[in-house]
Image (tube, rainbow, N blue to C red; front, side, top):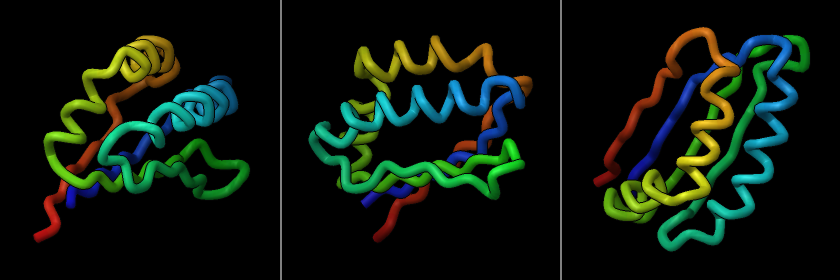
Length: 94
């Protein structure tokens, strides 16, 4: 199993845009082969700090996920909404 964590902080004016876009794309992601979990959490209502948590059956499933058209479109849409890079970590569970 593969676990992915992402710490993300969109610009304040784009937080709700990002959450809405994430909700839309997550419906497609959950249908992907190998997706076990794909969730987003907020630190609190006032904060821009978001935490994404994903679980995949395999590294191959994660790699395929990152190459889907809906994810490429999602990244292109949301990238301008961030001032800095997101902190993404990938862990292999043995």
